[in-house]
Image (cartoon, rainbow over all chains, first blue to last red):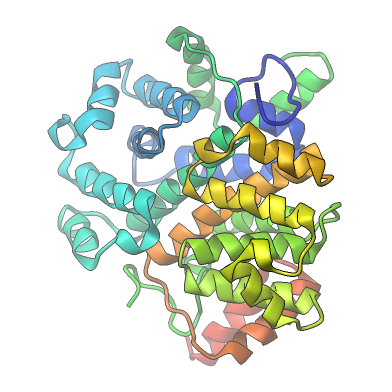
Length: 191
Length: 192
């Protein structure tokens, strides 16, 4: 049971968006800019960074929902998502993404863990300043989202199939539709 | 030196915010709702939670600027801010705020550290669901801001008076568009 009174049936962070729409707006917009809006990093790469950090933070809801979105962007390739979570160095991904995941893993432990060598390695693999910036902020943001979801002990479905329809909708439409989604559910006209 | 090229003379989070205004907007908006918009928790209480978590994360810039904002709201009582950072359970603050700081400290370690007993304790001291929610989200958000600031190795000035001056502006004018209001003039002063 969640630590505060949330509406039944809205899993993970969605129950919290419904509880406090005033903070949901900024949280959704941040996710949309970092994960969905145009970037030189593919949406799949950015979702893999989010999934990897969520798995390091042991947040079931976030690693499952974002892992599902990453798999959608990878034409349903769930095994790559699993490999990235388990051991990204052995996963079939670019050297650049591996170097960015290494930075993200350091950020998860703490900001000061990121060294000049980590950043230099990413640059040698072709990462730009904005890609390094976004990697650090995606990792930092998921250290927030994960703590928010688990710190209030929200509910998450265990059936992985349940995550797929929403993953497809978010992959296509982005994160900014979530607040209006919540509002329409409040009004009883589920979108 | 920061890990990416940021405008010189722009301190802490304002450097990366100036670098990437697209993410600065929701980051400032979140801080505004959590720390400044009307709430049953006072701005001083909320800034103390932010300061305490930033101290636990050893983020010099965040704990210094939010500590200065907290002190501004407390009529300049910097000793109270220092005591809260050091040992909240002994600081001269309400029992409710102590219970909320205990929850924030658990969130800093990881979401799953928060126990039903921690929540029960806060409720007994009068905390509402929204106050518990906001405490968890302030603590979680500062686990983000702190990592953002230190993960990019941003520069932070040492002079405490600079923080006092900026804190007074943040307390009265708010966080929304603080990048434009604070960072641009500093960048201009550097001749950038």
